[in-house]
Image (tube, rainbow, N blue to C red; front, side, top):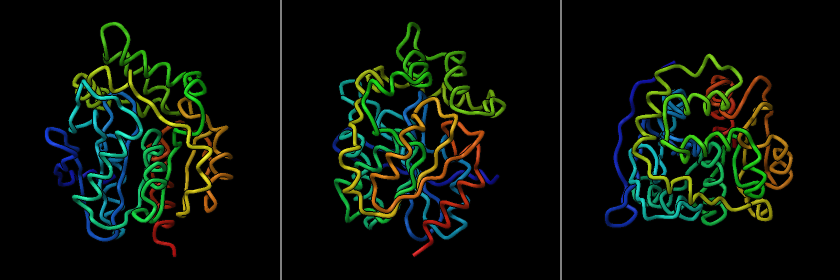
Length: 274
């Protein structure tokens, strides 16, 4: 796996508020958006894909959502879907300045779909990995991974290595992937995140609007997902007019990690297709 560090920069949303991005390669732009777990960042979620997409002739751009990675982390904000879409729009307008392909995992998938609904002319294709936003808040709060994630961030004492290990063991089918370096990387970021990142998190139910997403869409879903219910995968496939969903066995919430080669190859093939 090539994990050469990409270059980076910042895009301003408004005075005092900016998003961090990483980029590698040249060609049609592909923006990668991570999920909502404590300590998340574009690099931690997609480090196994940047070089592959860049080598395939794409401009791979990773976005740290507001409240995550090296982006601003205001404690006086409400971390709604609109707020995260605002950060993505700032990146597209300031750095890319052309229609984009978007790859989104979990919360990042919901951000990608909402962006495609709000700014359809700026989106060419979507690649979704177990996206959120396909049901009520209460449906997601019944998931063991979501409950563990909330406890790790909002419970007494805040995030710790032991709490994060419990969260990330629920992220994957193969627990051997959760190594100490991953926990340390995530914990360093998690300790900088205000409680509001998750306490005010609000992801709208996008099911009633899926038919308005007109761009071609490819989705991946692990059948052992503990965060975003795999039962919603058919709703996604039926809702978006041009959508294909791949279900993966022995896979949790991180298809791009547990089935890295399959994800990279299938996503690149899809983005290259006419």
